[in-house]
Amino acid sequence: MDSDIVRLLLALFLVLLNGFFVAAEFSIVKVRYSQIQLKAAEGDSMAKQAEHIIKHLDEYLSATQLGITLASLALGWVGESAMHHVIDNLFHSLSINLAETTVTTISLVLSFLIITVMHIVFGELIPKSIAIRKSEATTMATAVPLRVFYTVFKPFIWLMNLMSNGFLRLIKIHPASEQEIHSTEELQLLVKQSADSGEIEEENYEIIKNAFDFTDHSAKQIMVPRQNITSIDFADDLNDIINKIMESGYSRIPVYENSIDNVIGVFYTKEIIREFVKRKGELSHDDLRELMRESFFVVGSKKISDLLKIFQQKKQHLAIVIDEFGGTEGIITLEDILEELVGEIQDEEDDEEKLVDKIAENTYWVKATQPLDEINESLPKKLTLSEESEYNTLAGFILHALEDIPEENQEFDLENYHFKILKMNNKSVEMVELVYIEPNNIVDDILDKLDV
Image 1 (spheres, rainbow, N blue to C red):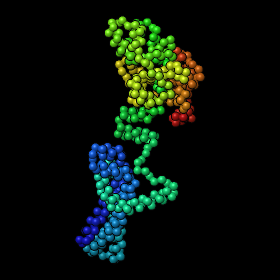
Image 2 (cartoon, one colour):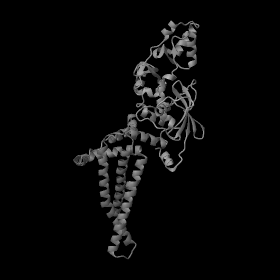
Image 3 (cartoon, helix red, strand yellow):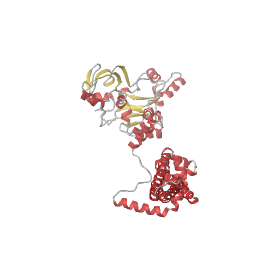
Image 4 (cartoon, rainbow, N blue to C red):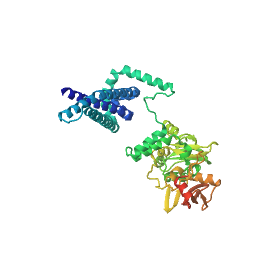
């Protein structure tokens, strides 16, 4: 009887040993390397062991597979015979009057079922669930024993890996790398899933999402266009210049001579006002020219990620965007670039104004100079974005569709909307009224829902 107890305890140990290797296998695959790396950098000795395992993932996965196989085979050999012997003795002790072959058959079937259930539940399912839900803790808890096991069986594991990798190469499949590499699209999906599950706050998610698109944007796409630039003609009367500087609300203002295409410098508002007060209003054009800072020019195709680095290196906050002929196309500021990452930055001088203002059912007033992709987020049906960067604002969409410059109060239909031009600034469309035209048949309704 003592030998039966020993064998049952050995079977239980083998079930738990199988569970250990299953937990180790799933945890080292599931755990995020960055979590372990951070703890290892903080000096956690267990994390350092786990970091080594993740860096050599193929070898240690082979070790867990070997451990599972050995534990399962040993359990089948020891466990079933021990359980069969216990059940057989139980039948005899209860004086159940059955043929010996029947008792043996029942004992074999019951022992097989009991060992199988124990193996699956306690040796597979429970360890796997724990490893998936607590991957970091499980990885660190199993790291040292797993490394010891790997060291003992290293020659055999090396031989198994050599054979499996050789076969993979034979069928022209490269062995898996230790470090999992994610594409941009996969990273975006992972971030979105984390945000949806609440792991990442909405504000942080927006910044991360914007960061993925940051390198794709050019200066031309986010600049303040030429017609909206607040600038100063250096030939203006001194009082007019000072008044414009004080009323503008901007910290830096471009200065030109003769034409906005000839920008000669930039006024720093604080410096001008400080000198104006210091000299009790006695400023001349020569004084202003001395106070004027050198202007900084960039081409419209310049990526804003590169421009941000240049701003940092040159300690600049404003650049004049020029076109292919050297004329002024717009201006771009450090704030414009940062807003592409963190969203709109409002200060006390900014007017809080919506891009899209819903004034009635299916009726919207829209700022046409703003990016069309942002406007689309507030519309019931998205307007078509240019695939070839022909335009990126609603105004550009209108000009591209009409192939002409519209007039104020002009009305027309485009896609699923009735357009009315509410405000023009010279030749630029500033404000538009959109009236959504709902689909009037089943086919249109289906296409509309499919966003086709």
